[in-house]
Length: 318
Image 1 (cartoon, rainbow, N blue to C red):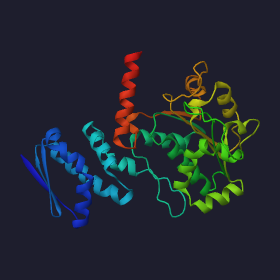
Image 2 (cartoon, rainbow, N blue to C red):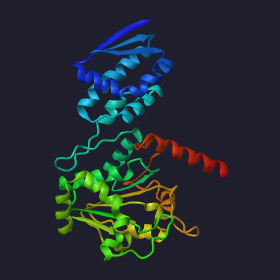
Image 3 (cartoon, rainbow, N blue to C red):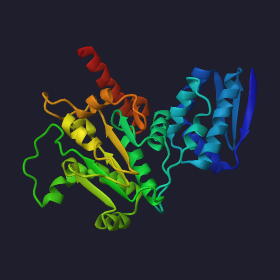
Image 4 (cartoon, helix red, strand yellow):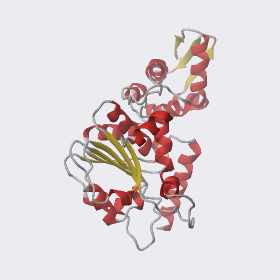
């Protein structure tokens, strides 16, 4: 039996780390056979090697990562499970990628290794497919890269689009002018955008045409040069719409297509353009396809369990 003590700088750091380590503390004795006691400004560890050193390294890495990026309980729990699975440098790996966004807004960083691969793909590919379940950050990270590219003068405009398909319910005739009619369909893109930029800057850039939010039908016949283009909810495109959109890409542009194959709202007889595209467009240079899974869900932990339950149910029905 060995022991070691980690000394924190002050009681505030000890309290904050205690809150972050709340979930791992419940299982660390059973899973690692290491006793961890947080007392005053210290963490006292006792147990057998190599688990003792492994846990001490994990806590010290967490302390360093908090200096580089915001870390919450969910990220700590994710990295703890990754450590149990043999992953190395968990916190450093996630904190090493930062996406600077708008003024007075915190930098965005990936919170899972799947999201890290997605950001890497966004960086190196002109066209990127982000495919995975709800809550995996597909749209949010793409929006962060778009805003960062605009602020760094890598592109001259951002174009956000999605098909105007009702999610399994008929809404009837919506009141208002065209902009008001399509606003509900484009709201998720607007929500992500407002997380990145101040509202007044968004409105100013929309008026100047630097940021455009429009339904997919308005992309037909256009050539999108010097732009960062995001197609959201792409599982609801038809094969014709997907081909139309992919052929809009112009010079010095990037394109991101995001979608969740488990949430197709097209009529049963209509094939999803996203499902077809991921089969056809493999092994094409400068085009990346990144698959995210339920392990990359960063919403409420219950969302991950709901997705898992539905996936198991579909497998049983198959």
